[in-house]
Length: 398
Image 1 (cartoon, rainbow, N blue to C red):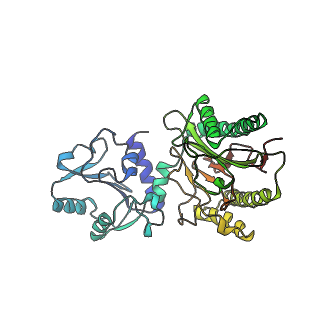
Image 2: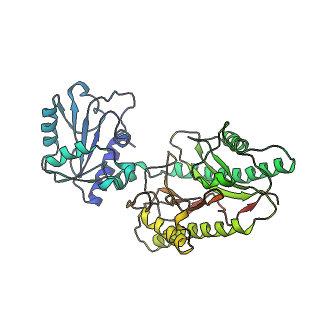
Image 3: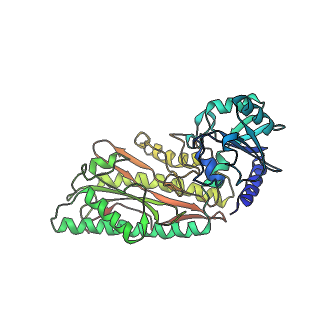
């Protein structure tokens, strides 16, 4: 997509959002979204502040420092330059002349910190010119979190690979246990990484195998130096995420649990059933809402999962958000499924993906998490990838 085509789409989005414009600002890479959304060449040295204003209608306008006056020349629009801080403020006044309300990478009360990339002083400067600043969170999502058709196809294939790797990993555990061979969390992690490589997948951080009490730590990861052994009777949690080893590929991310035995004791089944019910309540809320044509936000899906957990008496053991946006980064820049750590009021929109992964963590004992990925298709179909999803803890030695 050319930058001219992207700006046209941005202006259409601004009209839908009833905004006069989008003011993109960056200083030394402090706003990662600005450079990515504007497709700025990565080799250009950006050491001074710049502003790029995209109005809902008409030509964009740019303000750059004199010594970096050519840095935004790849973008359409009239250019102004500044040298001193006084000329910067006057240039910004001219840039926004006649404008009363703009979007910037800001979140009121830092409610959504993932998009808060503009510092408070710059916001004060813009507001001093009589311009209201509103959050660009929903705009950023449109241009950072939406997948094209190729990305969606790649994701579906990756999700299927991850599901297969889960089954193979449980099989690997079974084989080693039956053979009375030594086995650790780190061994299982290495096995999963080897499968990634075979299938042309890559990951920004290693997958996780957690046993017993380690699974009660939501962000536990074994290392070569720090890991626990696996043996009969142990509870095992596998969390794995990866994407195709190619440009612009997007992640898939799932979590499954198993028990190294021929059957699963009631204490584990009881907790899994609560987690599963919470997961399914969130998914049903999304499915029912899109079927009815209702717009929903990330926090509402979190509420659906957390309400089930509260009814079952385990809300205090569910200590993280229900899910996260998924994109080219494992934690993407769309709506998170969150009304705990943040109140994510971004709308869930077509062509975006997110996880649903409630969990119950019993310190010193074990933790259960069941993670699925959901993709909202261009036609607003709610697609669960990596089927089948987990319906019961796996008895690994059967």
